[in-house]
Image (cartoon, rainbow, N blue to C red; front, side, top):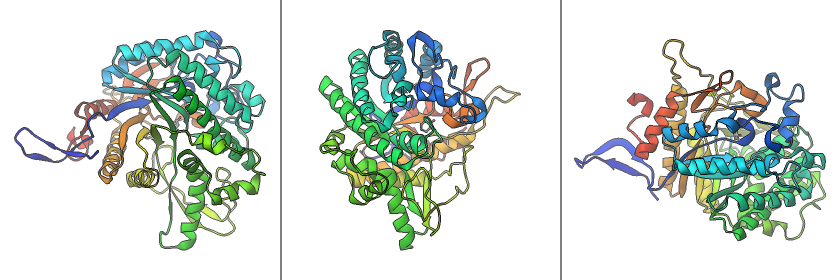
Length: 476
Ligand code: IFM
């Protein structure tokens, strides 16, 4: 697949107008806990995020997902809004505690009914449903038994995957097992910034393995049940040495790449943890959680890799630096503070790092990919004069990252789609409602949805399957 230069009917190519490959999938993404609300409705059990967000001091200003965007009640209007924007696909996640309130055992049919209705609504409007089975809302009962540090959670996840597939598999083609297991493991059990809020390197590394095992078991089950497209979404760190000529910085980047990326990629695509990563895991655990045959299970074939990208990471060797809690084994490594330009959440903007990342994943693993999340937080709101949300910063961010995708496609990357994060402003985990990533503005008092400038711009991008000359922001 290669990017093409647009050719007008006059036969004159436009200077920089570019199109994406035919059939490129255009969508937007959300996640259950971030938008649904209805936290105790229709038999939904508690998740670790209910517990965490209700624990004082864990989430910005004590915000919770109890109501969120009230999508559970407003999904019909929300799907109509997606159709109005021209989305071709919608990536959403299923809340495990809606389907199995205790994580194992009895199925809550009313929970499944909700997703059944949502899928029908999407299909009725010509929008392809792309399902993620786990986007961080683990049933609390499973956490009470150790959560992802317990191997049984991986087995329970595969059972849950089959339950959901049995209900939706006749209509949903794309099945993503996990979203960003890096976050589940290292933020949930490493630095404790996310639920369940544990700070323990061994627990984080054991969780990595059980998440991967859960993925492998679920992928196998989905495949044998007949799933068409099986996938996992990672958020690989676009890590680079601060000084690319300095061997110590290069070695530091290799360690971060090992613990952050290769720990997932190598067993997924090559069926084994790399030796240097095993050595690091072995510093914290006796490795007995990695049983004979597990890596083969994790190596279950997938059809497409979901890639979430927001920001790069630069590291340098700095003896005496304590290990970052989200990166076990990183003692002596300094993570550079983001330098401008940055988004509202403090993440450095560097589209070229996305191209580098995609090229690297293609060169090393040769896997088809989709961008399953990309976007930016800005503190935007309606203008008092016009009522419009003029989020030109977000338009520029999206435009530059789509161009970065095109650069990767020109390199030979088999990139099949792009999902903007996020369809609408929502509960941004530990940041609560303080960070707005949406294409659509949400007024949390009235629940009014208001498409921002970026939503209108994105609709145009979808319509023309590409970008115009300059940035689309300039076109306005
Ligand atoms: O909001 C999150 C999403 O749930 C997972 N990926 C990153 C996004 C922005 O932080």
